[in-house]
Image (cartoon, rainbow, N blue to C red):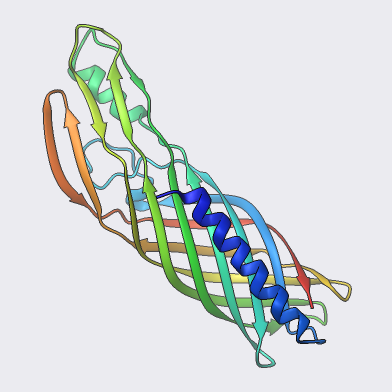
Length: 237
């Protein structure tokens, strides 16, 4: 699965649909924006223990959003979000365990990154605090596309066959988000609209794990739960 190509096509589709809608209205019920920031893996997804078969080895990553909304009632807004998340992997504990169990052998990491893409539709409820500032609890649901990393720890001793490798996979699943958004109007057409959300989803990854010369095949169901925050700017029309 080519995630970069898929992401480009989805962004192009969102921009095209929004442009068509904008031609048919003269009010300010719509908005479109971008957001970039940090994404913090939680639970098993963040765990780097070699003893946990559901460890994700994921470190704090980045997230990038293209989002839009339609205010169909005074307090309710339909929302749409395309969110891309990327995470490097942390195999420090795994390397330490291998070196402890195999004295005299050094190991190095050669792992890839996690890539997670969400396409979410949902609703937000606007709570006005002042004339220009509002809080918006929100929820969203939709498909998610996961590219799990190839996690590889290799012995630097050329005569050693002791190593660890978990093969990568690309799968689709069901994703969600829940959290709050903030809205601070900046004049007639612009607004700061950061969100603070938990995202997660359900996928099943076919996994081949090799330790030394032994290969074990299994199904892996990671709990991909993250907390996301970042800067955001929206255009209202």
